[in-house]
Image (tube, rainbow over all chains, first blue to last red; front, side, top):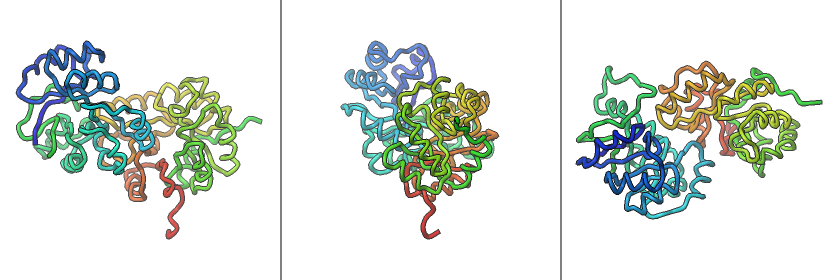
Length: 187
Length: 197
């Protein structure tokens, strides 16, 4: 299993700390303070900083990332079946654009036809909290995102890590782990 | 004479009559919803400017109606649209916008606020918003994951509905065991008690 780092809910200057890293880096462009979602921002991330994987909620942003040779993961909010089908039916299929499904934990509950509609690769993103969630999601996703708190609970289960925190899922400043990661790829 | 919606406690009683509320459009499945065992029907997608005849049919069939303000077409999420829905006969209004809860209550309808379970940080923000807006009911989505992430939700002090990917009776039972009052679902098999019951 390969591991990497997903940068989210952080600021533009903080991105610079991860340039040239020897681990894969993905960036959630919508949550980076100070960064727009336009062509200049895409060029900055992919062309100058060398971050090849970018999560975006706008199709135009994702297409821009793909055109620059990166892999875009288009945010898909999967909160109900009707909404999911409607959003996927109207979403264009483009090369080099996959899906970042939120909450990732819902993936095991999708119908086969809903799963088939999701452009690959699929990142499961959000509320993946337990070892059973990880294995269930990796059966359907190509990769998963884990928060710092969830990773601590999964890698070091015990009384001290059993407290579930609300509002502390920031993965933005994690150092990359060796065995598992904030951005883990299955198969 | 203008219609008067049930007070929130009566609306809650209607919700508690049956564990699954049909979540529907005003298309042909609306008729199936009218024939359901539920006392409440949720209208998710429809023309918000043309709801009156459907709501009147529901009332005639003994059903109460909750309208999802954010999903119906033709209406902007503001006080005027809340007034419109009240005049259309809605009994409850669902929205993710906490700022509308007071207006819904003022129109004597039951306010239902949506809480999206997407990421832990967003859940925390949603919980804080609910505490500020004080809805009568909270609807959590995607409901099917609630039993897995129940620990993320503090006691909100109000009844929970759960909707989103709820498709089987096993899902319904798991959600009822996790403490929800009822579920909302577009799966018609859940709209009536199983025949072998």
